[in-house]
Image (cartoon, rainbow, N blue to C red; front, side, top):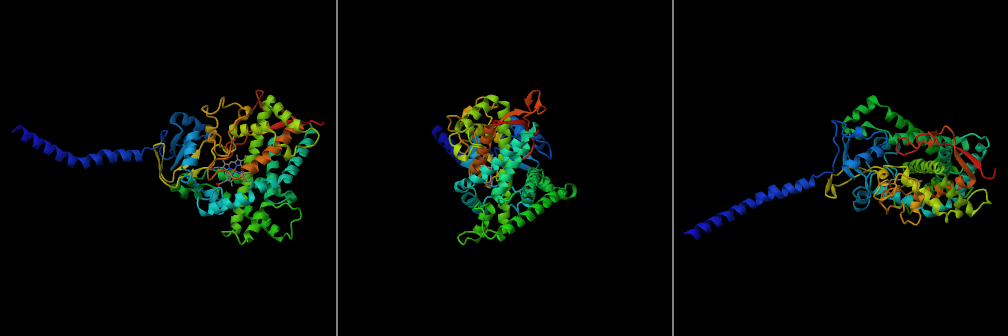
Length: 508
Ligand code: HEM
């Protein structure tokens, strides 16, 4: 009797298990996978409507770095209505810009970029896709290639000599020199010359470009309601004049670029042998081997990218480098010794002298680490759902890489807040996008294509500044004997106060 009861009991329990198995699977396994699917990165508490907007502050790279100490290197914020992933460690940056680079190669569509850049027909703000690929190929092959950058050696040397002459003249007045102004004009002039021609100073065109670039950068970095609250886009037209301001800025640029292009088209032949970007783009437009149609709007959008991405970045590096050098006399002395060892006879340092200057390169790297021109790089946007370290990142999430936090991470850098160029001597760490603790130019598909272009200008300028002059802080430029190193808010991170210095020419 007992075995029959046992058999029946066993049979029943087997049947029950068979019946319950799918239910178990449904309840447990699917629950586990769905919670896995929705395990989002940690988020600080949000306020209704604005989300985490109030936590950004005026210097978001600093506020976000503090938040990430509490919430980790991958945080999900809601800025207004927009989910935004904040990445604050080298490991996580690698996940975004190498492991999942393709998914994060898109840029969010921002309203002012759309107005100013011919519906984002440029390279920097263009969505990832065929158009971006074509422009990127064109720019890296024809405008920013090693050969093209080298071909501008004479232009760079002439512009540096012009800046040195100006500083010498100012120094004779024994008055403090506004180095922020001098450096911005220098970088602006060099970009204007290489982009639109040698006659940049004619009719004060360089002054127009300068003013227009500043306005452009303010507009691109400006807060637009519809970029963060798409459902409130209708408010924009009522309350804020940003659209009007952006349209005005666009019209001014568009007219000048039309003029520049027309002048180049009407010029019979090149009289000086210096082929600027407009010349290159116009000849490519006629090239039958081009695999896409290069329209006038494309040319204008590319030129705008070059003017803006090229100026506000290189200038910022020179400004911070000079500031760090004057507040660190030992480092200044060491750099001057290196540069002056090469030559003391010629008036200026030429590019061929730069190769052996390892300390100069270390000073520039350290400046790019401690004072990156783009502390939050440039925003990206995901085009697919994906997982990063078990966290689910939904499609259309915006991504901000907080490079400022990464480049001061004590995990990678000793005394991270100190300016110590020596850390780069005998170190293989480089900014080409392979060492993710040091990515001032970004990395991956959307990494900066102007790196070489920028470095050639910055190295030559800095070598000449320290070669030809002794530098001193102007009185009144200091805060309790210390130079005020506060950063100004904005898309790029300039010094908030102007850098006022005394220069004494060494040959004086
Ligand atoms: C020290 C100087 C410079 C720094 C620190 C810098 C930094 C950067 C950064 C961080 C990005 C975004 C990278 C990313 O999304 O991963 C970028 C993109 C870009 N940069 Fe630079 N840049 C500099 C100079 C230049 C120059 C001189 C040019 C051109 C003349 C230039 C042209 C561009 C363009 C066109 C992009 C957009 C690339 C794309 O979206 O495909 N940059 N730069």
